Image 1 (spheres, rainbow, N blue to C red):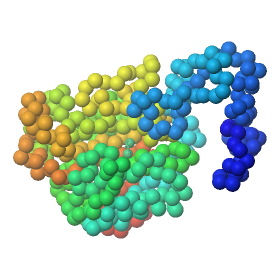
Image 2 (image 1 turned 45 degrees about the vertical axis):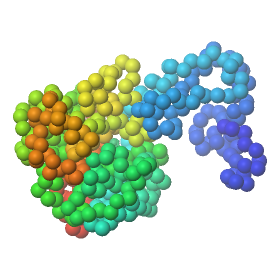
Image 3 (image 1 turned 180 degrees about the vertical axis):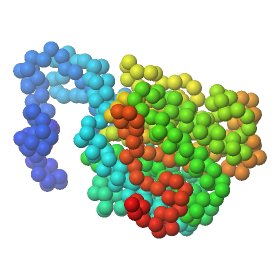
Image 4 (image 1 turned 90 degrees about the horizontal axis):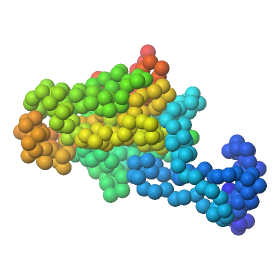
Length: 398
Ligand code: GLY
Ligand code: MN
Ligand code: MN
């Protein structure tokens, strides 16, 4: 720990002693950083194994940006090794212990309750940030959380097609209108562990036929993937399953023409779902361990290349299942003119959806010995969503 000047206490309160820090963090020994070189020299360690800081940097795993190296006075007197620890620590984080799962189940419950509260309150005329405010208030006041792990995404109407809407430059600042969907992607933080849940529902409380078409396509993908997940399953195969399910529903709804397998082959799925199906979840929202040595490398194909892991599922992993279907001008306009993709699109019908936005349905799922289980508890079927928005209790009485 850093040796802080006594004046620090005026601004920040009591400065913990090393003994207090040792008791709090349950570690073997605590020393001040200015003692580090002497203490390590005494131990005569042949080599120091260092890792880039795993915390706090929610995006290091995906940004590829270099992490600051560990530094202390006298470090130049030691042999340093920086490659060995990172994959080992990351692998530890991929598999959750029973105690970690208990915390994550709680985070999911707290987030689920806040989602339900928002569902009850939304109506045309409400501003996106007012939904965000109610979400955070419920998460803090009822759930006892001190953070949401990432800026909540409250995306109404066309904004729902912007995958990370709500972050800087796109600040949840639109007023919701009747006839639109609201996409709420909002999580929780409890003992630093994350929940990451998305619900999508109509501002008026009842789905139009077109909204129901897209919603049920995405729900079928979400439920179909969770039902198919178990140890031994390749994660990219789950993305393809989600794509097939969504494309089949769009075909049945008259937005597409042709063979679903040919669409998958041409990577049409990536036009409607340009992100990966899901990511490891834990101490980071997009948690580490997705592409470690000894595991499959990132796929190259459109859409699949966005996957944050291509691993084979194993018991104890926690991964999000978040299929989506979006109508993004930035992707559809080029696709209409594309030789490979345009032939599948019924342009006139697809253009009716240009301001639709999109649907995402995101669950946090733990892989069990013989299957998988969602830790979320929110209304999912159209009947459930409409009932809760009309005032029905959730969970429904047994
Ligand atoms: N909320 C970010 C994500 O779903 O990955
Ligand atoms: Mn999310
Ligand atoms: Mn997610």
